Image 1 (cartoon, one colour):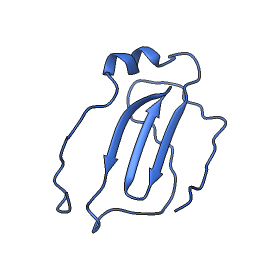
Image 2 (cartoon, rainbow, N blue to C red):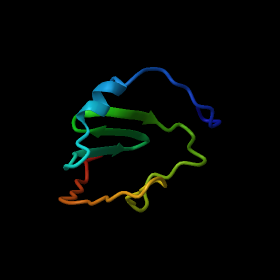
Image 3 (tube, rainbow, N blue to C red):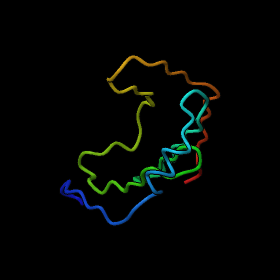
Image 4 (cartoon, helix red, strand yellow):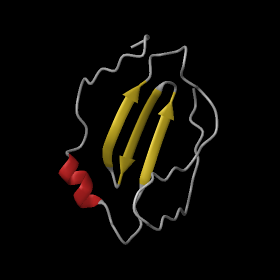
Length: 89
């Protein structure tokens, strides 16, 4: 909402399907589609989150692209074949 309240209005891919598709010791395909205030994230073809940010006062429509690793047990993370495609308005 414009005031920042969250609203869950649907579901994405079943969590078990997402987890089963993840290659623990191999490469995974992670896609991010950011078009206007709409964001879609998918891993190995399965949508994990779809968000529409209607809080214009706090959202950013441009900025930096960062690759984030959350804290947790020791792990190895690598990135390859990064591609950025600018979409037409």
